[in-house]
Length: 462
Image (cartoon, rainbow, N blue to C red; front, side, top):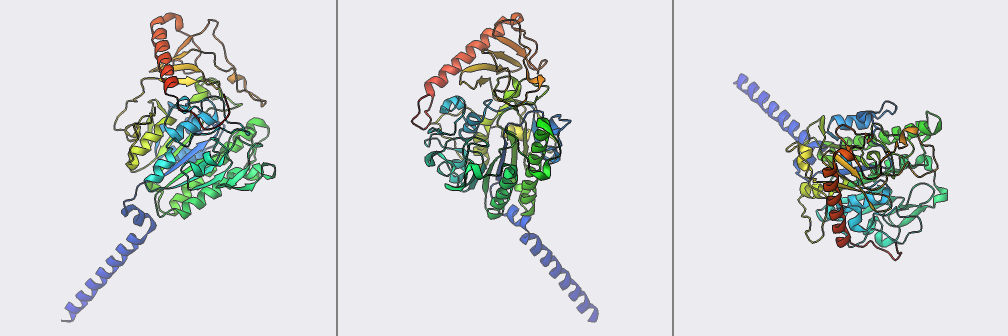
């Protein structure tokens, strides 16, 4: 009898321990949020003017980016990902709408500090789509899609906003929602990246128990360059560029840590990319830079981490663009994309997951900062129809590698990107059939955008 009692006691104790262990697992932050079956959080980090070759995982030998390299090692890296413009405003309009910037009438130059224009409130933005799906939506950083209250982030689907809604340093005030926090003249630019990172961590903390969308649009590494004192290790323009990039990498690491702290990292899709190419430094092996329609003006890094769906260490060489996130995220969260309002992006979830290895793009058109059709890519062929910018049109130093070795022949110029990614060998004369086909395709598509253009908001005339 005693033995039986002893066994029963031990069995009861074992059951109690098991119950306690299960209870602890179920009550842990990671498990609680996983078993809830909620939709994945989405953190979209957009760098400003970060070049294709500015990350170690993309071949940089002079900038240290361990956090972004780790993100790439745990997710997927794209080699042929494109911003739809070589400057800020058009790309941001594309992200919010899934469309070519020209389709939403924000393809010419950028919005300046005195603008009365902006992204039309009639557009159904990415933030509005996610808010409709029950997401808490927050934006931190540079909006650059309008300064008036009716076109700022809080009017375009974001529950919370903290940042500078206008252009970069020296030209925009700092706001929390629609309340002025600091006038531009009182801002400490050396602390902007730190400031935005604190805000991002707070947003994650406050919304960790529900699905959220965080759009983190950095000012870094836009010229003029600023870095926090903690990251100032080098001298000169190139040195400060390096320091600012490394601080940006640190910020990304802090956001990942915050997600991990709340047990939601693996239920969060983390996306990192840039709005256009670099200003003032080269993006070898690509040619050109910000503001140009050379590859370095448009082709940018893209890293996506989502362990539930994306195989660690994946690399895609398929063409994808900023326009694709709108339909892709819609697919992920179960939202329907209205057929009444045309978009140009494609659902790239199959590329992210490896279910397919083929891009849906038949071609990609490049528009210059003047808003005019400048080039087209189809497969490996790229045809320049208008002369690309020689260099970034600014006052800062420009590396010699950014300068164009201009073909001696007249436009158009044709390059095979599979063998000439640097666009150095014009083969137009050897492939007149390709030139004619691409010219017709580009002209036809541009005419379609002209006919379907949806006007931007505002009273100014172009």
